[in-house]
Structure formats: C-alpha cells, structure tokens
Image (cartoon, rainbow over all chains, first blue to last red; front, side, top):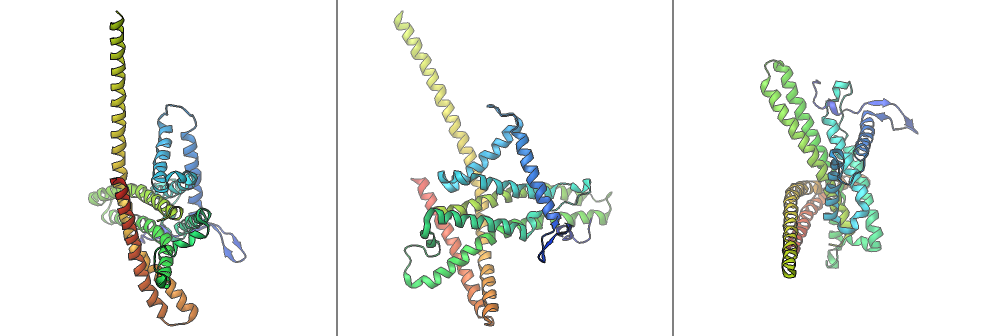
Length: 248
Length: 110
C-alpha cells in the first residue's frame, strides 16, 4: 500500500511515443481504456452468443442492460432518440466499465488498478465529444435556429448582451459539470479506500477489525457509486442532447 | 341442448376475458413499480445536477475571465465581471431546470 493516497492516480508511461514533440505515449490510462473496450465488447458478445426467444441468464443480463438504456433514451429524447441509442449505450458502458475496473483487485495479477474515470483529461474529453456531438445534432435538426440556444425567444432585445454572455457561460459549464461530478466522486471514493486501508497496516492486520469492517462497507458503497455515477453521466448526456434536439 | 352449448361458450369467453384483464392489470402494476424506482434514481441524478451546475457556473466564468484578462492584459477586470456572470449563469441554469420540471409535472397531471 502506498504512503501517498494520490499515488494510485499517477499516469505512468508504458510505451513512449512522441510525434512532432507531442507526447502521445501509451500509458496505463490508455491500457485500461483498451481493456475496458475489449472487456465490455467481449462480455456482451458472450451474453448474446446464443440468441433465444426465451432468454437464458446471460442473455437476460444483456437485455436488461439494453432495456435500461432504452428507457433512459426514450424518457429524455422521445421517439427521435432511437437514432442516438448506440452513442448513449457506448458512453454508459465505457464509463461503467471504467468505474468498475478501478475497484477490481487487479493487484493480485500484478497489474496496478487504474481508474481512468478519475482523470479530468479522460472524462473531460468524453464530455467534450458528447458536447460536440450534441451541437452537430442541434445544427442538423434546427439549422440556424440552433443559435436560439444562446438567445431564447421572447426576451427583450435590450437584454441581448447580458443574456448571450450568460447563456454562453451556462452552455460551456455543461461539460464541465458533467466531468467534475464523475471525477470528484471517483477520486473521493478511491482516496478514502486507500487511507482506511493504510490504517489497517498501521494497527497491524491482526487487530484491525474496525478498519477492515469499515473498508468492506465502503467497497460495497463504492460499487453502488460506480453504477449510480455511470447512470447519472448517461442521463445527463441524454438531457443535454435532448436540449439541443427539442425546443424549450 | 344448443342453449347449453352457447352458455358454455359464453362462460369460457368470460373467463378468458377475466384472465386477460388480470394480466393487463399485473403488467400495469409492474410498470408503475419500475417507474417508481426510475423516478427515485433520476431524482438523485437531478439533485447532483443542481449542485454541480450551481458550482460550475462561477468556475467556468472565472476561467473565461482569466483567459480574457491574460489576452487583453487588463488586470483583474474581466475576472471579476465573468465570475459574477458565471454566478448568474449557475442560478439561471437551476431556474431553467426547475421550470422544465414544473412543465413535466403539468403534462403528467393532465
């Protein structure tokens, strides 16, 4: 166990790559993203390997996941949202697998667990991608009318300079609030686990019932947080996408 | 004899109808239950949304103000203006969100 609880978030280079002076090395963060993509794809394919009308255990897990996301998309985007299901489903799986991978005891396989959803850079990029996606969708649906996002109808023209500035700030704060919510939750959970595990070492494994018990509770709680945060991230991506799809 | 047959048929039809109604009722109950759970979860999501939107407005405002100050070499002028605007934006966001909730309630109430 490391002495510094923030050491677990350190990005380490695995394969150094540099193009034109820009560092694009393959790091442990990238490694875990690749693992997450392959793992989620592999598990889902495994679940729907045998396609039956009456689903077995594995297939019903995949179907529940599908229904869950389908419900979110339908609630927030309406019937038009069907087109964007794949995008939302991908985001949900990517975030959820990232959250859960960080909680797995991968140290047993001499692979230090790394939560890429605890990094502003990784989640921020994801949020920016969904922001750009929602801008594209908005422009495609409304054309020039999309600019009304920054100046809603029915507001006196004299307020334009103030309202436009406020709307631009509130628009820019969307991906930021999405990112901070997820990142803060992940960092706090992992730091807490690390510190309390440090107590166990301080007292000695034999006598440390209280911290071990407490840590077990926290780990269960963190699994719940991993699911809820993935859900919240997905719902709010949907909400923001819905705002650029429909008029308010 | 014919009348008896007819009565029997009618009875069968009635039981079928009864079963169908019961099935639909169960379905509706299931649906309501799952909707309740979903509402609770999305209530949590909405709470988180309000908190972070209130906070992120001023932060983004400060960021924009800081960059403008650096660009125009204007001391702390834009930083102050944009932090205030960011605060407005945060509250405005929450106001818009609350309004959209109100609209949803109206729609379901009808």
